[in-house]
Length: 199
Image 1: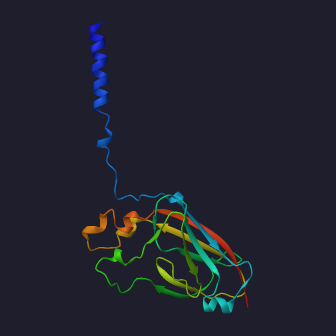
Image 2 (image 1 turned 45 degrees about the vertical axis):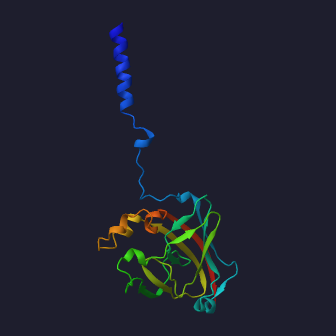
Image 3 (image 1 turned 90 degrees about the horizontal axis):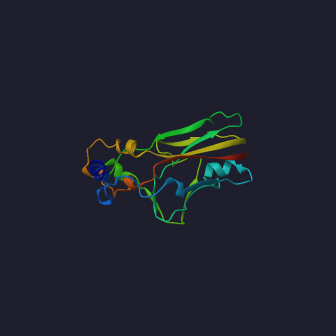
């Protein structure tokens, strides 16, 4: 009976030894402090048709909004991809494709990117032009639109590992948890809106 009780006590102590204490837990400081669920993305498009002249002049009236519904500031990737589909669901013809990153002014490519910081309850807005569209992460687009109906497909996507891999200089600060690329929220979100264009 005494041996059995001793065995149970020994097993209990051994189990406790295998459970890490609160002080032993390690946190990954490279992960962002904010959650993607706190970010709301919406696109606002005029209900009335937009003229070709207004599109050419950059006055589309289209706005992308990023609202931080969380309780902490959120750092966001400052680019959003855009596809323009015609009434048949086909890609609209483009009349411009320019590479975004050519000459860089800083030694580290990562430092070239102006990440956004959105305070709790605040909204970040960007005005959307189609001739050209300058917010794509890879290229600067322009579309050769005619009168008709179109669907705008915006995709916000930030992949920290892929972004950091774009700098091949082996900079020591790449993994610094305070750098904006390590604080930015990783997520992929797509929003769509319909646009009518008139002559």
